[in-house]
Length: 243
Image (cartoon, rainbow, N blue to C red):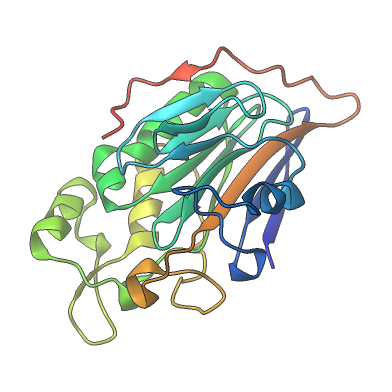
C-alpha cells in the first residue's frame, strides 16, 4: 500500500504519499469512474493535477482543485489543504519540501535536461523559504533503463558522467536516481535517498512491463495548532517552458 511521509515544517506538517499498484490506477488521460474515489481515499480534498509534457513548466496553486489538466510538469503550493499531484510509471516523482511550502515534480530525462528540478527549487525557495528535505519516489533504475547515446549525452552534458551506468545485460543506461540527486545539488536542495525501482511488481512500469496504469504522488500542507496559517501566494505559472 501507499508509502506515507509526515514532515514537520514551520507552522505545520507536510504530508507526502507515494502510491503502489495496490492503491489502483491514477492515470488521467481518460475519465475513470473510480479515480476520484481513489484520490479521496488518500486525501479527502479536490486534487490539483496536470497533463505532463516532459518540460520544465510549473504551476503555482493556492486552493484545492484549482488546476485540473493544465500542461505542466510541476505544481507548487504554500497553502493549507491544497493537494498537488503528479503521476508516473518510470519517471521520477520528486517532492521538494520547504519551510512554508512544497513542490511535486514529474522528472523524466527530458525534464532533467530542461531544468525542471532547478526551476522547482528556485521557485519554491522564493515562495516557501529555505529547503527542509527532498523525497524521491519509485522510478526506473539503471539496471532496466537502456539509453541511446544521443539522449544520454544530453544528460551527461548537463550533469556529468556520473549519470552513466549499465543495464543488467551490460548496455548503456541512465542512472535516474543519481541524475535527480545531481539536479537537486544544482538547485541547492537536499539530495534524496533513492526510491525503489519500478521493476518491482508492486509498482507500474511502462518501459519494463508496458503497463498503461500510473502511480500517484500527492502532497499537501496542514497547519498545526499555534502555527502560522499557510494562506498561500498568488497562483500562476513560472517562467519555465512547458514543452
